[in-house]
Image 1 (cartoon, rainbow, N blue to C red):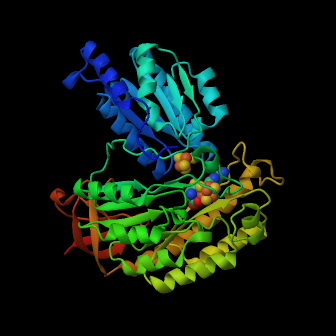
Image 2 (spheres, rainbow, N blue to C red):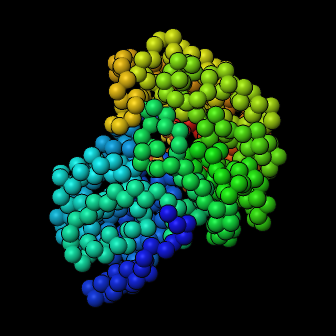
Image 3 (tube, rainbow, N blue to C red):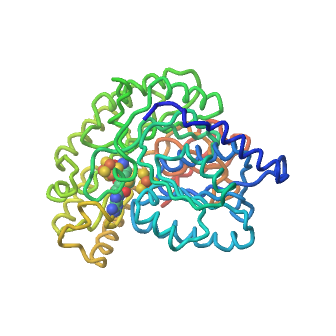
Length: 464
Ligand code: SAH
Ligand code: SF4
Ligand code: F3S
């Protein structure tokens, strides 16, 4: 598929939609509202900013609640059953809004509806859903909206067009924080994971397009940029690897910090580790999901590394970046996981001493190899293991965090604390939010603080 925004007549479709709004007297402050509800990972957050950008182009204005909207878009996730259930239940609540506003369009996109059985379910059981579209069809949103407004016919698109579409405008949610997709898709086919089936094969954006977008984001006030890809280490921009791309971005003018996610351990390269060690703008946080500490389970998961090989990478990383914060994803209760396998994962946590982990109970995904593997782990066994793991990790996280107490640190002030409206929240390499007293004029700026203490969910600091 082409690497540029050439979808036939996008501009023509957009102006046709604007004309429809005009005819209905819906312009200016009476412009129709759009509301985007996002589930899932940062990739979906980034896609939603593009959906929002398209909505703005089509003459919609952003509203704060679904009740005020004339166009509701739900960007779904399929990674675990819980994510799908949550999306379906939210969509269910929109039925009442549609009853009050018959002109309301409800569109569902993202990973869940890229699976045919889920798109079919929406078609059959959710008659108030106007259209669904797969993860490769974001640029088709205007034509879907146009058809819905003109013919009213329901549309269910699974295009399998997993390309790269440049040139879609962004409507960003947080001015000082930005997502920057560098590659899409995944070739790894971990046996439990739905992502390769709903995001297509790996493809990288051109370095010049990424650098141009980075410049634009910095000019627009972004001070914390996260490079996104299912496996950023596989970035291959016409021969340029992720390390070189990060060096080039760091060389851009501006006061900003750079992050990246996610890295697959099998190809987390020495060059990337070195980039983190040498570039001041790269935040010292490495998210390197291990999934399990047991070799037989890693093999069944098709992860392509052993626990020992993973630990070697971690040692390299710790040597090159001594203060690095390391985080991980872990799956508990993969089919066939024995007590011994689980203990190997616990040993992995003790050996690495992660700053934080994201842990998940295994959820079978239709169409993946693991879904038909024998010896499922009973739910109560998985839950008990999950709790044991959290207890172990909480102790490790607290201990790791204590290393920051007494240190001076530069943080990006994100906003007012969610738990204490008198305090500000900031972000730096330690992965928990940093709370400190300060004036709201600092929001969106960097500030120097001294860490004074830590608690279960946050870090306390004072301005210096
Ligand atoms: N591309 C990233 C993230 C993939 S999804 C990576 O490879 O790390 C995020 C996390 O969800 C995964 O790391 C994994 O821990 C978890 N996950 C994926 N499929 C799952 C499933 N079927 N059940 C439970 N957790 C799952
Ligand atoms: Fe899923 Fe594995 Fe790809 Fe990550 S690397 S998205 S876990 S298949
Ligand atoms: Fe979910 Fe799709 Fe991301 S399945 S985790 S939204 S890639």
